[in-house]
Length: 149
Image (cartoon, rainbow, N blue to C red; front, side):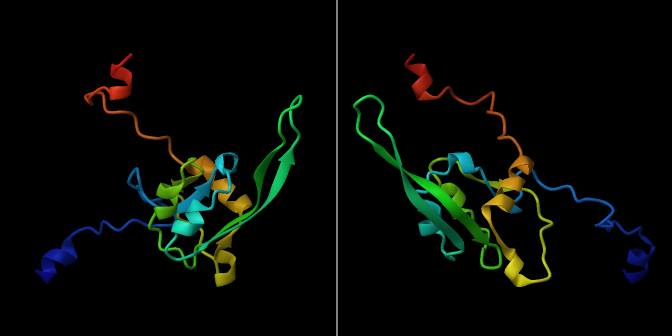
């Protein structure tokens, strides 16, 4: 058995030179689409590791022609500590506004553990690496919402 294994050609990929072929839905890093974030804090509340840090403030919008003034939350800080994160994806599933996505980017190692807390600017950079959603199954049943039309 040993001789047979020794004579076979190795199938090891030389990682830095040859990039691995990742599965289409691989979990790498969490990307933030800041325009969709309403600072509802559901992702931070649902996170079992408490590794998401969100700070915000309220901003009052002027009322249009005799209407009532509106307030909205403005995102000041959105950070994820990847030293604590266990990549469960609960934050992505809990977000009702599609502000968090899985990116297949996996090369974000640091020499200092304090550098693994990524702020919103760095999380926003990974948005361009997020793959498009998979196409709908052509053999799937038509949704009931579309059947009634």
